Length: 204
Length: 191
Image 1 (cartoon, chains in turn yellow, orange):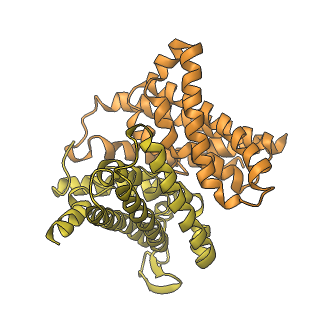
Image 2: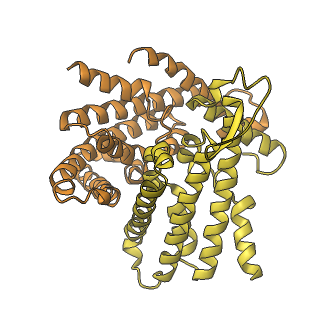
């Protein structure tokens, strides 16, 4: 059990997929315009990563080394198709706002990276812990970015249709830049620099 | 004709793949350290995007839609792209060894480039015709190449600049990306 949590905590901080390993930037920057999107995307990644890690780990002894990458990609694509159809059926609004970034989980380096680096070499329990840890790490990073972008860019915060609060001055004059694509680069650059300064991640 | 020009400009400049849609960020930050490799990567991506758009358009309209299995598109597209990249690699190796050596490691990496899967998904989503898909993929690819080349030029100079220690590498590259993105925002007035 301790090993389970140890593997899990690794993905959250020490090897956080976005801030430390710098993988999966495309979705992190593109869908972080609102906290809703960040949560939706993280659920998608959690489902796909958990599914692919379990299956890859189960079949790891039978897959010939030569064809492992195509096999992994097909497994990942299957889970992405499933989550795509589920989102389309049950949360159409979220499905629309995630757009092409939901199917693009297929080519997200995080998922293939975990299948190749961890799940294809380790038993199922460890792979589940790894998937949970990495997904939580992805969620934490995405949530941070989305939270800052939504607050600065709209001056208010809402969660799945419920309005939480509006900031006094910023609410009337929001800094729209942060909702626009360049704002994502800005927030990300500042966050990375801040985390380095605080010593959370290493300097280059 | 007007419609096609609009699609081209929108794909290449206004909704630039890297700066506005965040597709293909890995090569943008990874490869764009040298001008020559940025150029090769841009060419390779444009080529694969163009061929992938044509092939997936045919598959989409003659296999997936007639048999009512559009939900299989994600698996289908990624397999097509992976196979295509392999074939193109073999073809270039046989016919033009200089080009093959110039492209080097970039060709196999393109399979997992979001920009290629992105353009096929965009084509399907907007239900473009064959000609529109071709123009869209050319626009997207050339826009990608343009930004990659600009970025690599800036980064060659940036290596000599005295940046704060915490900003070295990725963060400063992202700041440059932000400024490029703001510049490209000006093109929004065209469409």
